[in-house]
Length: 415
Image (tube, one colour):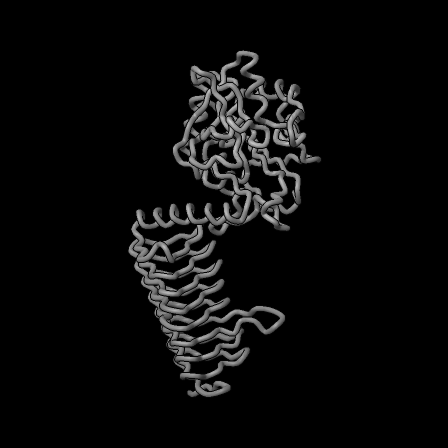
């Protein structure tokens, strides 16, 4: 596959989302949907990726990583105008240009690779992705000649009643010959009901000029799904969540009830770990091997769980580390805590990490035993082989020495 550059269209307001957050930043399984599209471009080896931004561009910029340049579309005048905004940065480039939409988080990298390969082998001016669906509402329809060749893409708002019956839709993914693309952009007009510059109009322009136009097809409608509403977002979340769970199960993780389990896309889980029902594992979480989590367990961002750890029912871990071989079986909360190896966290234990102004750290060293219903008012430090009695309150600034025992309210340290 020859080298190419990528333009990602991410300037829209997403009015139907009814949100102050830019559409492409709405999270799907723990990360902004735009991140998945960037992954596809970068995973395919794009020489450079240009992200076209408009609405609240400063917010979106903070989430861009890798070999990415930002292009600002000053006025939201349509997809062709968005591409034109990037023209100055690509004026000396003669190769192929992949065009992706920033609101399509379910793209499959292999599908796009096949599209690019077909485009380059056929030497087409444009190759774009289509999919057949029983419910084409909201999508541009593919108009074909009697011989099956492409004649045009008709946006739904401009389509006739007969054209709206067509079930082959435009997925909004294109590979263009760069020189032909920018030449054709000059001829795109706003002669449509939305009075916008449609990128799709370039297809009929190419056909009239007898330039080669090809299509690649996917059988998976979800790849073409552009997120326009909260309902679309929920659907994308459900599809991607299943893919994530399948990946973990194929990697040796037991998930007892996938329907009630949520795992963020960037979580890491070791082999032979069992995830019991109603467990939530959020972004930036690392779980070791041969652990048991749940049921009704929540591991929040920034947490790490070692190997051979048990985290049981109605438990929550936030920005904390739970060391190798430790137990936390019932009704407990760890926040901003570093827990050593082979520590027992009794039922009802709480680290009171927030005093109303700042969050403080709790440290529990190896082999300590934290008795049921203990409250650790951070910052505290509990030494190796130390113990807290049931129901005690370890107050702010307390250090329990190695082998020490603390009991009472407030906790008193016994020699």
